[in-house]
Image (cartoon, rainbow, N blue to C red; front, top):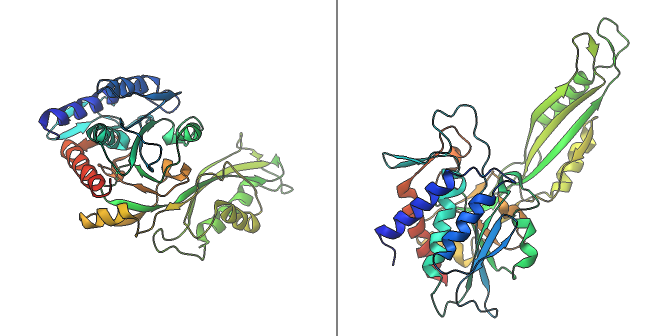
Length: 353
C-alpha cells in the first residue's frame, strides 16, 4: 500500500530530475538517477544509451506484457522564464521547474506504479517500465533504439500530461521542407522571378486547403507553415525561398498520402524529413479503455505527438498534468495531480492485471 512517505519519495525524485538539465541527446545524468532510484527498490535494470527499463520481479515470458513508458528529456527553457528552470520550487501546492509537467510528473507516477506492482505474484500480465530519451525530438536514440531489445508488447500506456483522461487516438506528424525556386537579379529590374512570391502562392494554397477526410476522433488534417527564410540583401531578388510545413495527420491518411497531395498541388519542391511518425489509435472496446471509462475517465483524440507514434502495438496516452502547460514559461504541475495520477493508474491496472 502507498502512504505519505511513498508520495514524498515520488515528489523528491521529480525535484531531483528537474534540477538536472536533460535536454534531448544529453539525458545521461537523469538516466543515472532513474536507474539508481529503481535500484533502491532492488529492481534489476537494463540500459541502452540514455534509456533505462525493467521488468516485474516475477516476469513470466509465457504471459503478455504491458509497457509503461514516459520520457525524461526536456526542451530548452524559453526566454520568458521568471524562475530558475532548474530549481524545483514547491509553492502553494504547485511544483515549478522545467520538465515538471512534460513529462516529469507522468514519469515519476509510472515509476511509482511499477514499484507498487513490482513484487506482486500471479498477475495476468508482465509489467515493463521504460524511461526513455529523445522524445521531444522524436530522435533515433530514444525508445526507437530499444524496441528490438524488448519482448512483444500487447499494450502500452504512454505517460504524457492529459489530466488523467484517456487519449485513445493521436495525430501523426509530418514535417516537410519546401523550396521555391526563382531567378536572382537586381531588385530595380523587371527580368526576375522572385522566389518569395512563388513561395507565397504555395503557402496561400496550403493555408486554404482542407483535406476532405475528417476523422471522428482526430478531426481534420492540419497543415501549418511555421518557418520561412529567403534573401540576403535588400536589393537582390532571391533565387530560393525555403519554408517548413508542420502537418498533423489524422487516421484517415498515411503520411505518404498527405505528402503526395501537397506535392501534387504546389509548385515548390517538397522534401519530407520522415514518414515514420504516424497517427495511432486504440479501440474503445479495449479492456484498458473500458476499465478507464468504468472509473469515470473520458476519452478524446490528441493533436500532439508522443512516443506513441513509434510503437507498433495498441497504446493509450494518459498522465497527470495539463498539455497546455508543456513548454510554457515557469512550467509547473500540481503535487495533488501526481498523487491522483498514481492512484488512478493503480486502480486501472488493478482492473486488468
